[in-house]
Image 1 (tube, rainbow, N blue to C red):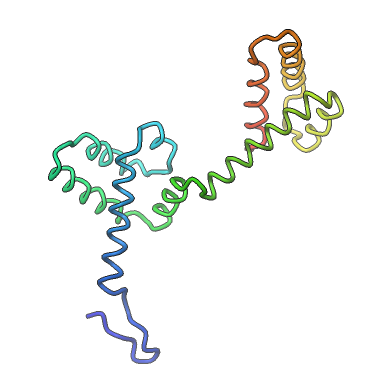
Image 2: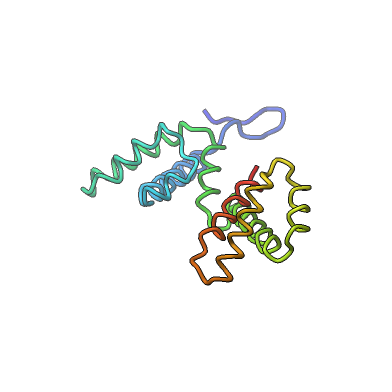
Length: 172
């Protein structure tokens, strides 16, 4: 059934052991997804078709019934493309590519915020040169309010708002 190619000598399909390892890998991914809190699950690139199955698995507490539901969830997940499953695995990984990109974005926004607060108009002009779609007036107002909050010892509301604005600007 599996057979070899007569010309090259290679196998036509993966072995039974390889298929089993792949299925068990998807099963463990499904178990991980079912164990995640809903807020973390919402941040992952999980297809909408799988969400009800994950919720059902989370809801079931009986050992045998949960095991059966996990198997069904894995079966539904195996129907998805391998790229979708890899994207989910990558997002779950603490050191995954998407986590590294997000961290780098946060660091850039934080550095830009500090530069705006210390550099004044020159830093704002440099930022606007690199991001021409930015709202100059809004950024200038947030910088002024953040400096005022810092001087008066108030809670850092504008400081945080400036960070959110810069993060959204750099994410584009």
